[in-house]
Image (tube, rainbow, N blue to C red; front, side):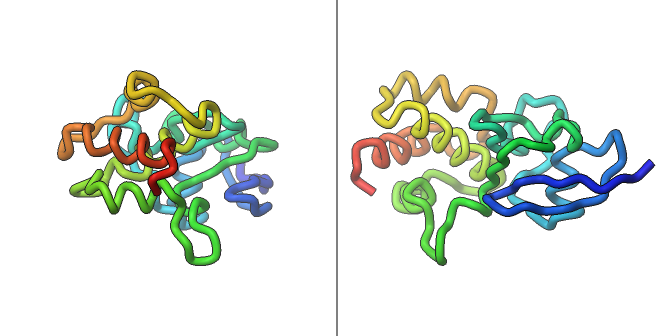
Length: 155
């Protein structure tokens, strides 16, 4: 049975019609056309579908859209402001922290969630924050450097 719900995504109140079993990932991509979160493994192991919900990283491939009602949701599309990229987005470009780009939104959001919680993280804390986000292209070192650069105010 379909029903309308209200979601707060990227600081906007949005209404969308969902069914009880609709996943947040599918609602974001197919109904709201926010395609930064991507379908990867469907088991929460790859992180391609990562969003920030209620201040915490979540894998949107495992979250029912109905459970997101009343939560503040941030996607990669919500990071730029007035046409200006977020410092993490800038750092990923500057440090060459991506290749194919498939994992990049999840990596950037993992970095943002960490920096929101701990503005001056250690390299070890950054590595732990990236757990659950797989990259098959970069080897992670440039991703870590980009996040560190933002933490150190270099970007």
